[in-house]
Image (tube, rainbow over all chains, first blue to last red; front, side, top):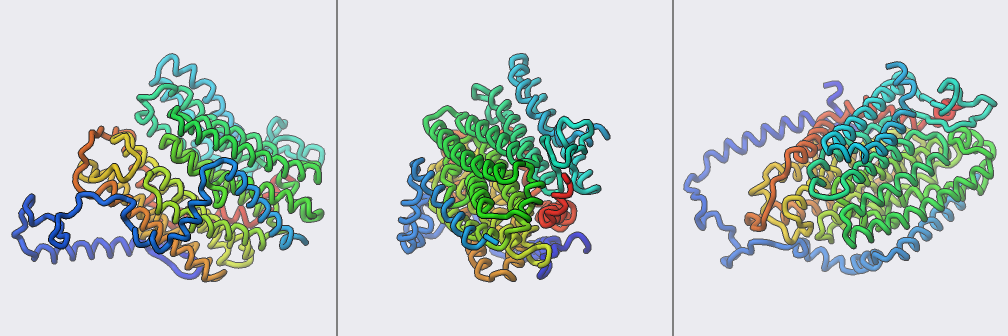
Length: 112
Length: 511
């Protein structure tokens, strides 16, 4: 399949074959699904999400998703929030700091 | 046709520039005529860039001297004295992408800004911004680059303030102030080069720099490089960009992404074509460092956001990181010798194209969500998939593409970057893949909050057909580039990478 295979230098990747395989797998899954239980009744409690016996929340806020991740990464996020003040003076400070880093690194490693 | 092809670089700047000034006049006559005029101007410019691109792919670098008896008369007295526009496969690709995004933006804006005042000014500024980006892309000298950069900054800032809210004005002020500071340092760098070499032409300076490389050049490169990192919104100088992307109307955010694309091009042009023959390894590592920083801080901040457009702004910052990573490895590992470095650079360039398509689609979806619900906070939304299945399908396409999931375009370019960067330093690949996983986590959260759950109970409007059309066009190209990436690599990515890794060809175009 000349022109359809991406050559990455180290290997190759053919998305057309993957997509075709994916379609075949989806068809197979649909076929297997057709053997499933047919007593499904739309709009009854059969379709309600199970939430350990309690009524399931209708909406989970964005802030509640990945809560554990944020708890464990708290120190990192405190640092990031301190960096993002929204104050324009701080933006200029970061610019000057970046310029200094680039200049020092280039001066140390980029001179003939 | 030959006349058009010969003068295409000049026309590509002049047409949108003149159209920008005519647009308000036509707007007084009829909105319909104005809209046709704007889209026709951009389509004609894209046609010019297309024939110029074909010419460059066939014949190599094309140099155009403004005001010369013949366009090829670049150095009548032994060195270039005029404004010289130099086109190769790299800037032809960038210009074509910029114009495509401008056209998509205009079609989307027909309905999106229909209810707002100052539409004439909106289209006029959009054309001015496009002319500025064309100028930045085609110019072969530093001072013209600076002038067009200012055109881009001023028109972008004015567009960011389009909604005329306090937050919009604040974001526009930040944009203008930080851009001005960046431009000031850039001008200082250009002044140093001019003082050292007495010339401003990039190709001539690239030639002279081999013989007279000194600390002054290092200072100039630092100033130019940092100013461009600021313009494209690399961490840690990205905050102003996120602020402006958040407050600008969605189509303006898309054009602001295109300005970052041009900023990246200029960074590559200066890094590879001007300084590439004297300094490469350390500059490449600097780009890799800022690339990794952008990926991690960008994606971590995106994960924290609940404002959809701010979240997308941080995602855009992270995506710039992947491009810097690929290009940095390309610059550092001598792509003219090492095949993997060339692949890394090609992956970086391919990711520019993919990133613009993916993030533009997501911004336009965010604009559509704002259009139908008047809300931006993802906590206030939910269940939109019930009423807007097409929008949710488009979002899934954009989400999977930007997260680098096969078979979408983001995967193809990220795979090229990962596999080639692995030869350079495997640790960088691990960091890049981690960034991709976090990116997927960001968009899974967004999708769950906006589209899933009980049906949305607030008042909603329909998404107009023209807006849906532009998003489907972007989705089509995302799918096409995902399914047939090698076609894109063969036709325009590899020639663009070749143009960067052979600075002697760029220099030879003028001298």
